[in-house]
Image 1 (cartoon, helix red, strand yellow):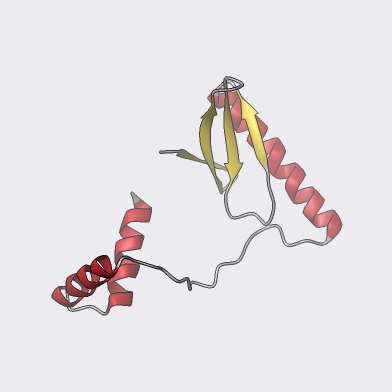
Image 2 (cartoon, rainbow, N blue to C red; image 1 turned 90 degrees about the horizontal axis):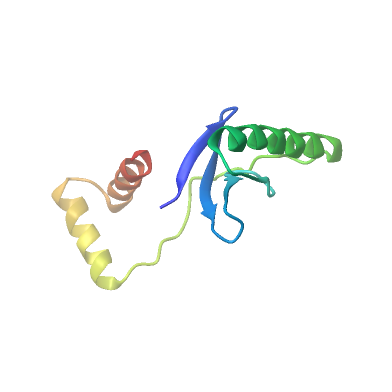
Length: 111
């Protein structure tokens, strides 16, 4: 599992790159890549701030919207048995499948 940090209000996933022996951070929700590296948490935070500011400046110069937009809609493909189990779970909770999935995803995303 990857760790998530927040830099200037923006979330980034952090992982260890064993090939170079450094932590790698990558911002989420951007319209392009803004990754950063360091061998310490303090360094990672500082490099993340620099990377984010550089990305935002380049977007501003080029007139590009820096952040992805999300419609709130997506398709999910499930094994038929999982689909059936989800419908049963939703019905047992007196919810539509959409309501049950939205609640289940929101709960999982918070943890």
